[in-house]
Length: 275
Ligand SMILES: NC(=O)c1ccc[n+]([C@@H]2O[C@H](COP(=O)([O-])OP(=O)(O)OC[C@H]3O[C@@H](n4cnc5c(N)ncnc54)[C@H](O)[C@@H]3O)[C@@H](O)[C@H]2O)c1
Image (cartoon, rainbow, N blue to C red; front, side, top):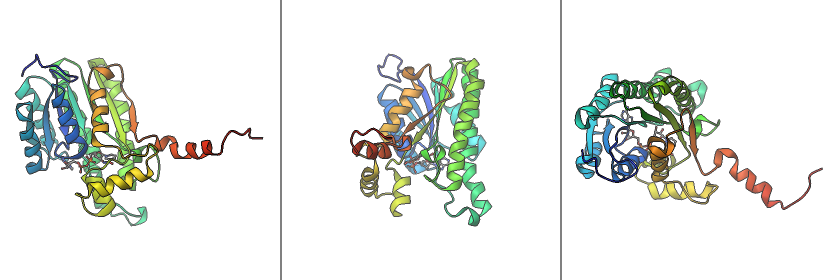
């Protein structure tokens, strides 16, 4: 590893699950552009290998299904056996999972969704902590929640429950791991155009332009977010800039869950004194 390289993630090593596409891929590309080394951990072998190859020596692909604990453990171990350290982990792999009215939800589909979104995140945090504690350099772990985990009505029931659970684990793990100088935080994105959102919006994971236009139309800031907005937040939390932040969930949604569109409606009424 070239430790002389400059950049906001220079000399550091991270594992990112779900890095074969979307938010994970954007974060992997940013960390490498900023001097870091990254394990691309994903169950999608073809796409994951292609992303790793495009990043050269600074990235390796490890096939990893986050529902399989041994795969997750192996991804963390690969970082240390390849580059001798583990500084960051991003528990990001996800699916939308089961969608539909709660009274019709098949429990098998509920279990499969939770296996990825809750069990997978738990295993990622568990094995990242194991390796970071062993390395003794501290570290930073982040996990992808969602605005669906902080406000009702923004996602399917099981997804919303899982994403709220991610925030619970973030606080709980942060409280334990501070003694090892390991920080744990979550990111809750609003709708960002990726294969996942395009698929939900139009049934076509490649219809990114259509998803981008649809999201922009309802965004308080008048534009759709991009995977790079999440990647920059991830770098902030994983890197030196966020080094005193732990146990937090950063919402990245253009102010939507803060009520941004409602506030703008109140502001448009002009200045009056309510009696
Ligand atoms: N895009 C959004 O609007 C949005 C909003 C809120 C939260 N999120 C969350 O962001 C994360 C990334 O989603 P995205 O939008 O980039 O979607 P995406 O479909 O582009 O990427 C998800 C990645 O996770 C991988 N994956 C899925 N199941 C896996 C498993 N069991 N093991 C390993 N890899 C697996 C997929 O192969 C894919 O590469 C997810 O956790 C998602 O719930 C996305």
